[in-house]
Length: 244
Ligand SMILES: Nc1ncnc2c1ncn2[C@@H]1O[C@@H]2COP(=O)(O)O[C@H]2[C@H]1O
Image (cartoon, rainbow, N blue to C red; front, side):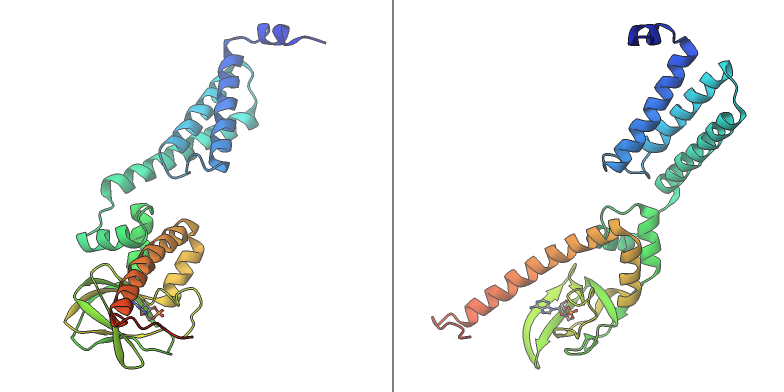
């Protein structure tokens, strides 16, 4: 049985290139599975392209039609991937408002995916008095406030105010449960609206967007809770406490 030195010694230049190609393939795939690289950044298709060309080159010494076919397909698919990423970087543009929404709710989404999400919703100017959600009723549209001011009302009482950057309807996004408050625009407001069902469907099909959205909601909740707790403690400023 040949030992390792004899095996390595028996490799010629083409074998060496082929081996490097195989290692690159396996390394890229392992990195993808470990989450070290993503499939939609340049590095993954580039390494795959280099690997397929290396293996293709090594096959010139030992022709095999099936291996050559798969390597050519791999090279072509890698070039398609690289071209797609280039087109997204170079040509997909978001308007300022679109970019603001994308940064706020899905900051790590690629521009083309963010654009797909944004196309599912709409920007609108809401008049003073517009009601965005009604306490106890299911939320129809989740909103992001781009400009203006809204009041949060519980049982007809104003309990908090939200403005630019705040989300509306996020608390019941996942469950579709009755909304926890009535939200009313108290000045003309600029909004981004997206149907709750449509948004939820998109998030379920896009785990990366779901993770982003969960982070955005967590950040939003932190601000809202802090604000509400501050209001509550100043309302109880006379030293009284809430009884249960
Ligand atoms: N205390 C609060 N501060 C800020 N916003 C709130 C508060 N309570 C409810 N909301 C918002 O009002 C929305 C009503 O619908 P949701 O319960 O889905 O999500 C809720 C939040 O977006």
